[in-house]
Length: 271
Length: 357
Image 1: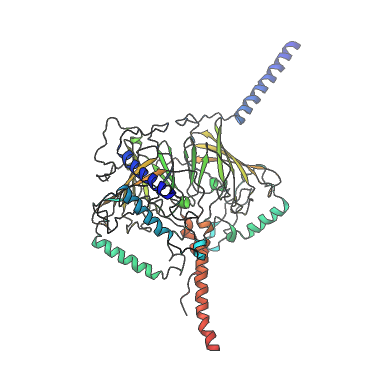
Image 2: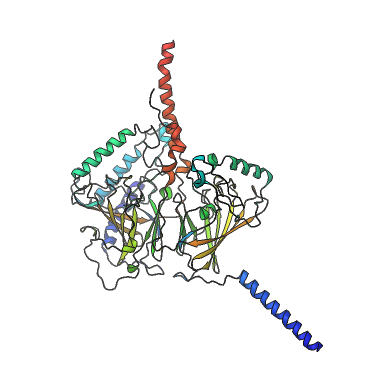
């Protein structure tokens, strides 16, 4: 009798352990295995897009009115739960002050308003699609916004020759995951429209992993000791544009911002 | 001495290109998915003009004549500033690579890139074309002088588009460099200048090499204009309302030749006068490890009485390409506008000062 009770308890414990183990495995190991590219690597080629409000603010935020009166509800800011692990960004105190100034002067200071190159990781979650063209030596990431482009060097890797907007990306495969290590940034791009920013010490390590035929897991570990007290991680899914005619179209915004940037320098008709 | 040695090498180089282009022995390598492999870094920098100079009547120079023509063209570029002046130091075209003297030259002995019409010149302009050109000139006048506004300036000074990406892809005064990357179903061509990217979807029915279909009707370096036939794939057609600076491109493989058809231009960057109705058919074929033959046909019934064709080369060059962020650092446009307004202000104030004296 005692023995049977013991067995029953043991069985229950084993079952519970198994269930827990299964749950852990499900949570951690990506069960999905991507189709292979011709060279046997996971095939991440395709046109991808984020569906979230990270470009407004990578931190959690409520809905807010449009910063431009005339745009009314059409220009208002949708709420978002944020993409930063742990919620808030670990700013150094003086950097937080600068972020708040950026935010207050967003229309004047946001590089996106001026059609400047978006930097990394912002290019990935702007509300525009981007295309991965995956070859063996080079993997190209081609963004619709401003025709921004990144070459990920899988071979012939060198250090960044100089600072740039999109940085210098070296990549490698870790099993099912494409790992992209990017340095050599200038200090001019932002993370979002809310003034979240970085310095030229920015170092981004991104991980692209297929999670189903039409979705990727995207995570980026961001390190910038001049601005943040510790590295932090952002995560989000990316969705394949599955329309049969999906393609990257031109969004050459330079032309769209000339009056904004140079309008005050236009020759005035003589009085 | 060194100059003479270089001269000899250049002549040898020009001669060898002509030879290699005619020898069919080269077997184009394949990508893992079986496409002819055009990947790598390429330059189409050349001193060969699109149209044949008025005083030249033949199609090809001798190697010696080609070298002389190149030297004369290089001297003309170098002469943009006077030696020893401040401007010469500030805008030393040679030193900063703002000319072709440091470029990987895609040399040929052609006297013009245009091969059809046979006279190496653009065909006559239609009556409609003349009206369009006149209307454009009127529009330009309305914009005022070059420094009156950003919009009255040149497209390249505004960092909107330069000569490189085309199509057709043309030698841009400097940095005429390209990177080609291929993946199943796509060919991507990155132009160094303003990081312009062409993503060219391929007709899926041509992914695999056609079996036993001989290549017909195309020359090597000499005769035969590229065919401008259209093989439309309904799935790949773009709506006519979508108009782009670089148009909308569709590609297909014909044997080892990549054929790209482009339409849907916005007409705001006329190529030698072209309109939004231009259709460009480009043909890229790798003829040796280091050379891609690049032929194109331009058809625009609104501008020219007939289609015309050109043959250029792309030569392997050293990568990688660095980010060319043009607009982000466009102090040139800003400063010239500021300067022009300041001059106007000074001019307006000058007579007042005189009067007050």
